[in-house]
Length: 290
Image 1 (tube, rainbow, N blue to C red):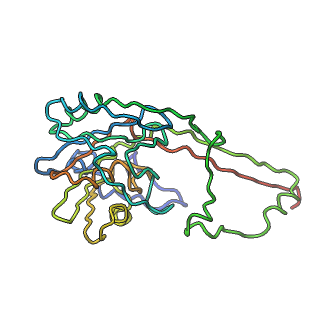
Image 2: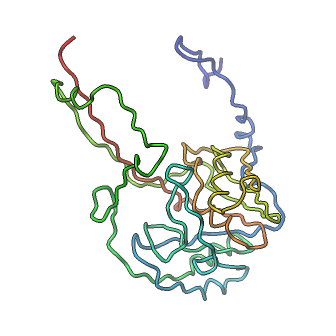
Image 3: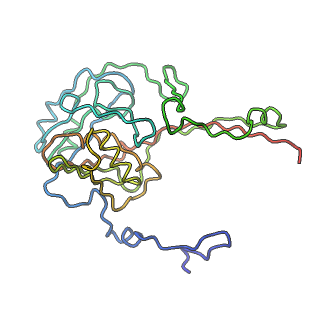
């Protein structure tokens, strides 16, 4: 038994070598963005510089002047994505590239170019003018909208219930009742959230890291309003994710919805990968009775 896999204790299972372990550590694993495809166009995101408000103008002149730029997808030349239902493989409620801005870093445009470098340079040259509004930055902020999951989601319609928690807490000698929160933060698995989209007639192939390929397939079809049988998802390896690759991401949906005639490969930068803020409440009660 090697040091990396010590002899298991009585309550442990038998250590098994990872099926993909050797391929990953030797560099032989081919991730979604490594798939060789003919003549791809590279996509780079343009994100909002404000947390809430409205886009008044996008100046694309300098961006379009960058050599190698093929197109710039904005609210004016992309169709609105069909909304997904709460809890069904969706990570955002943003279905358009504007003009409304709901959060800092929201995607407002996507540059397509012959090279990644050209797409990135052009994206940095997109100039946005905003009408800024007060933002609700965290839980409890003024203007924050809170929805009851039992009323907006069939999946959460029935809340698990066993015993009388309120009565038990009321009779407890000691009660700890607290809320715990995590802030919005950069979330960066080893593999970035890349997407490569290939349209062949009315059929779409998506190369994307996914922990839920069937959910991604059906989520994509729902968002684009097409038959799920016309969507094929390829995800041979996932380079870390911690659950974040189980959703259909908005940056991916934009690329998939485009009628651009070439393969689109979207390679988002690490700063555009964010983990959402969370908050949960816990109430624990205890008595001295045996």
